[in-house]
Each structure stands twice: as structure tokens, then as C-alpha cells.
Length: 336
Image (cartoon, rainbow, N blue to C red; front, side, top):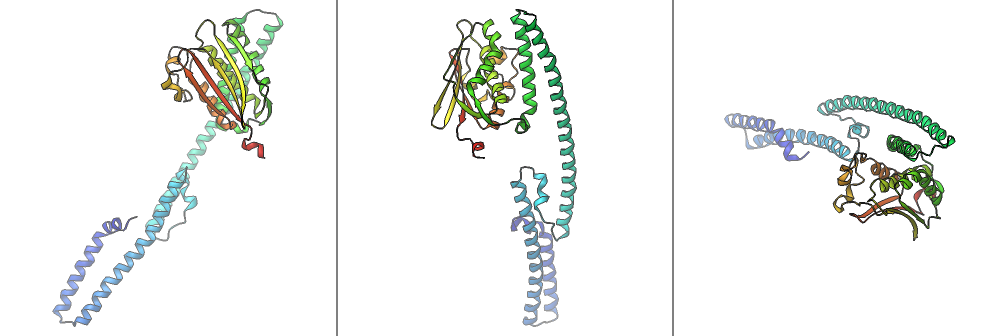
């Protein structure tokens, strides 16, 4: 609260006080009051209102300054009353009580929405697990009967991948409750992903090159397998045609292990590179592919950040796309 704003707000009182003083002054002069008496009465008339307004301005300025400062500091501004003392003037008390009622209503609404969201998340997770069971049984049945139907297995695999994306998306907001950081064999995770995508690679005649992946990293194997599987699936989906390849390589640079997954597919427009991790962004490539939802890389980026890793993409249209995942050897969780 600025002093000039306070004066403007109390301008009527100030003008009324000044007019009253002029009237009293005229009466004093008419009564032939001495100059000393006029001076004394003038001093009293000035000092008392100025003191009252000064005190009032100070306590209101203190309250409103604290209120606005706390609002600017908080991520959830509706919790401001938790850091605010109740003011000692009536106007401030009314504002405080109104904010309390607003805050109470907001907290109740937030809790209600969180409960609804939790119920939704729990239901989706339950549904996903229920669907995955018959899928696993179906895959087992096909294997036992020696069905040589790659296309059928491929469709089942794609359905399973789609279900996994829904599962990880639902869990991504509180992924910390689901992953376990420990030492993991990078080569084993990659082998598991390759086995999962083998039918797709064979059907599309994609050459696979895996080199220098014999590293141990600290991560969650389940989350990392999903991340790599999503990248491999994208490489297959956006292949260029004949002579397609996917190259997987890892290198150690100082305190960082970098995993590179490269393909010679249709590539990504340079103007779209920064947007590929945005939610529901499909870009020019996605518009030509009805199966693209723009959610895969968004989920990947979210999980990568929660695991404490880094990811970047390099690409040139109709030449290559290169995804690099960086694993820090000195991640913060290694110190605990």
C-alpha cells in the first residue's frame, strides 16, 4: 500500500477536517482569540488527525504488505492464511475471515477433486491389470500351439504397448511410489526390449545393430525398458522403407554414460525438434500416421526427469533420428 493511494482513499476525511479547521479558525478570530491560543488549537487539530491516520496507515500497510508478499511466494496462493497473523483492525479482520472461508471452501474442493482423481487412477490401473492377464494367456496359448502367425503376435504386442502407455501415464504424476533405483545391466534391458520387438523388426525387415552396451547404470529397469521400447517403437513406426536399420550404442564420457538409439527413418523437421516431448504433439509425421497420439515421448520425458536422467533428440529429415539418453554415474540417489 503506497502512501499516495492511502491519502486518495481518505481524501474526503482530510478535506472535511480542513474545512472544519477553517470554520473553527473563523470562530476564533471572531471571538478575538489570541494568536497563542489560535496556534495551540491549530496544532491540536493538525496533530491528532495526522497521528490517527499515520497509525492507521502503518498497521494497514503492514498487513497488506505481508498478505501480498505471502501470496507471491506461495505456489498454492489459497494457503496464504497459514503464514498470516490475524490483523488487529476491523477491516482487516473482515478480510481475514472472508479469506478463511474462501480457503476452507477451496481446500474442500481440492480434496474432493483429488479423491475423484485417485479413484479414477485406481480404476484405470485395475482395468489395465485385468486386461493384461488375458493378453498374457493368449500369447502363451499361441506359443504352445506353435502358431506361426507373426501378424497376430504383432497386433497383440501393439495392444500391450498401448496398455502400458496408459498405465505409465496414469502413474506418471506419482511415479516415485512405483520405481526402485538400483544397479541395472543396460545390455539386459536392451535385450528384453529387442525380444519384445523381434516380430515387428522381422516383419518390417529392419536391420538391428547393438554395440558397446555392457554397462551398469543406476535406474529402474521396468521404467527404462518402457522408455527404450517406446523409442524403438517410434523408429519402427516412422521407418523410411527398404534398407531400414536401428543402431543402439553406448559410450562413457567422464561421469556420464550415454545410450544412443539411431534409425535412418523419415526424420523430424528441425522446427519441430523442441516440441516432440510436448503432450499430444504429433507434428507433420504424426499427421500422416493415424496411430500417432503424441503421448509416447511426453510420457518418456516425464519418466526420464523423475528418474534423474536426461534425454535429447537429434534428427535430419529423410536421413536419421538419434535419441540420446544420459545416465549420470554420480546421480543424487547414489549418495544416500
